[in-house]
Image 1 (cartoon, rainbow, N blue to C red):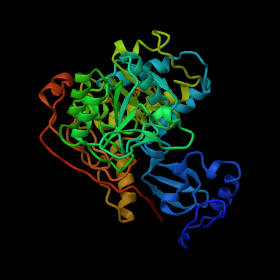
Image 2 (image 1 turned 120 degrees about the horizontal axis):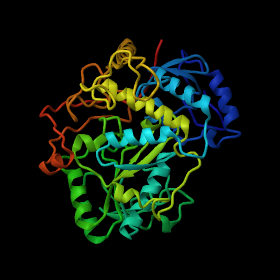
Image 3 (image 1 turned 90 degrees about the horizontal axis):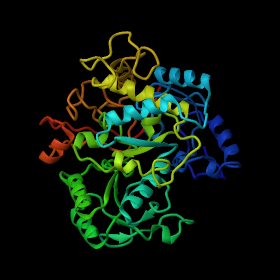
Image 4 (image 1 turned 135 degrees about the horizontal axis):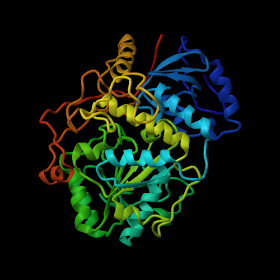
Length: 445
């Protein structure tokens, strides 16, 4: 499939029907820049024009030509249970029947915030937004207000949304001032952003010695450059550097939150940030994100405090309903869900904590269904991101890989330092499992 208005593409395999996608792409490039609403959807990195999706169910998607695929992308992270999960669909339908948005507080927002605060170790209070970019931007504003400083430290290869000050790339040298990575980004917006290589201890130390930062911003498991786990002790170093210099440590857990563990990387590592940025899974497949931290910091945000942030659709009822349904079900599958019985398990037939009725599809069954589809086509259903066991940070539960890969994945299992362990009250076993998964879309029969 080729298009003069689009990508220089390789010829599609004879078995792949794509006439309907080609027709839609021809229409799309006339009204959408590049024919898409987000650059990665253009499929240029795999040398073809985009395939247009018609539907999804479980581990599979079907395009407008009727081709079916095993989906390792799962909307780039939100769909931790795959497509069209019954609990999420039921929650969204019930919420929509009462109204889609009010511009006023709702009970669902409070319940979701309470659940997130229960799960994420460093969060006592949060503010919801509509996208990860918005949450990153707002967290940075809060960090600057709290510290009275402007400079930011980030790491090369990390992506924190298309915020002007973070859409920067490094120049030469171990620690350099950022230069705009896109036309239209003012040089002044990135001048205060210092970029150092990930896992480079010396560069991080040197940068903090030269500059008084408002925030040290990191994806604790960077996943936008192919997953590159932190080397042993690196997250602890960032915590120490922030403490020593008065900067705030900000973890961007948009991808890792609720995925690598019930409480994200900070639960697994025991390293607690000052602020956390969340997205993707928190909205259950609908637009939602949040940033949060200790009450003393978060009460600086208006109207409780003087740091302004607002959004018409922040915490909208549909996204909140989907988010409540998806994390609650994820916790049930991991065996340590909040809101369940005294033994941590949901009684058979009981209402799910998300308020959407009984858990409709046990996790193991859904995982097995996905694994069968992968095995059928020669793939190894290895663990994508390790699932927390009954003990926080414990070994993965057999037969329960999660859906949605972001590059090649291997989860770093490290002992928690005595200080971090005391702060987080976590125990990590000595087992050191590893995992790997290849980011791909494979065609199924």
